[in-house]
Structure formats: C-alpha cells, structure tokens
Amino acid sequence: IWASRDGDVIRRARIDSDSLLGVEDVIAAGLDSAYAVALDAGNGQLYWSDYGTGAIHRARLDGTDAQVVVGGLEAPRGLDIDVASGWLYWTDVGTRSVQRARLDGSDLEDLLTEAHGLGRPYGVTVDAANGLMYIADAGTGHILRARVDGSDVAVLSPESGPHPSFILLAPGEDRLYWTDNRANRIRRARLDGTQIEDVVPGGLAGPRGLVRVEEERRDH
Image 1: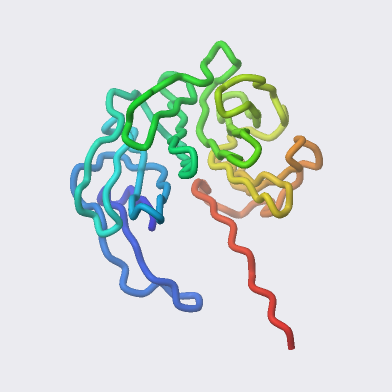
Image 2 (image 1 turned 90 degrees about the vertical axis):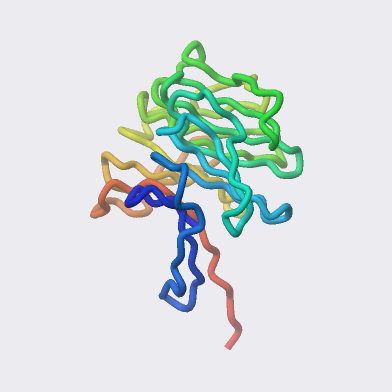
C-alpha cells in the first residue's frame, strides 16, 4: 500500500517475485497531497497524512469508511503508529512540531516544537518497546531522539543531512535508516547516533518513503 501524488490516490498491489500484481486504487477521492501511510493490520485500518487537506485520515483496508481522524493541521508529513498503546504520531512541517493523538483522533497534543530546535521535521519513527521516538529534521539536517511523551529531547546525529526525510527503525540491527531527498541517498546510523554511513550513496531521484525487508534465510 502506498500514496501516489500522481492523481492523488492511495494504491495497493500484491507482490509476486519482483512484480506488482493487480495494482488498484484503494482511496481515489478526498485526497490532495497524501504523504505517509501507516497500517493497523490487526484492526483492519489504514491511516495516512495529507498536507493538502491538513489532516490525518483513515479508512478500512478496502478503502471504505474513509474519514478524517485529526483535522486543522497545517502540513502533516511523516506518520507512525503505536498500535499497542493506541497512539498516532506525526510531524507537521507547517507548525514545526511533532504531535500525537489517540487512534480515534482524541487527546491531541504537541510533543516537540520549534522551541526544541525543530526546523522542518519530516520523518518520525517510534520505538514503542523502549518508549522512544526518532525524528528526521530536513530543516536542520539533524536526527533527534526523545521519549514518546516529548521529554528528554536530544540531537542524536547533527550531521545527518542535508535533508533527512523518511526514517525507520531496524530493532534487530539496533540501527536507524533514513532517506535524504536532496543528497539523493539512503543513510543509516547506530541508535546512539554513531557510525553514520551511506547505504545507497547516490544515484537516486528524490527518495522519500522507506521500508526495510529482511530476506528469509534458506538452508541448502
């Protein structure tokens, strides 16, 4: 499942080897500039941010029952979900903030703001097991870490830019991965911010979304 700016739709497909089969539109109405998607598979819900509508939306996995969960935002970008605790987390470039709300949109709160050193926060990923979140800030070029309630914020990697955007956690490796759509590369670092290195050093064209798939080991 992915958001496509071409035609303002959310699409899905099955994967067979290296091919996408049966590509179809899941959400084809009510979108303006859908950006990030997050899946609550257990409850059959799909969430997405849309900086054109200024909202966090959700629908069932077949596209039905589409609704606005949180409205009145300026420019929401990155999105992550902690299903076990029942929280949605997102960044808002317009207000230079990281926010969260319950899965039904209640209990909206600011966690981090410009006062915490945010410039243009794009990506957010949550380490629910350890009560931490990591933020990619495209304005400052920093990767930041804080507790999920917004406390203990710190710059983890001050030289991760120039434009870190999507970010994800790889717990099995104790690493963070992020895309940089100005330098056109994918980078990673240890969870303490050390050992920054390029995974894909260049040759990309404005990389944004990022997912890590662990290859299955086969005994021969």
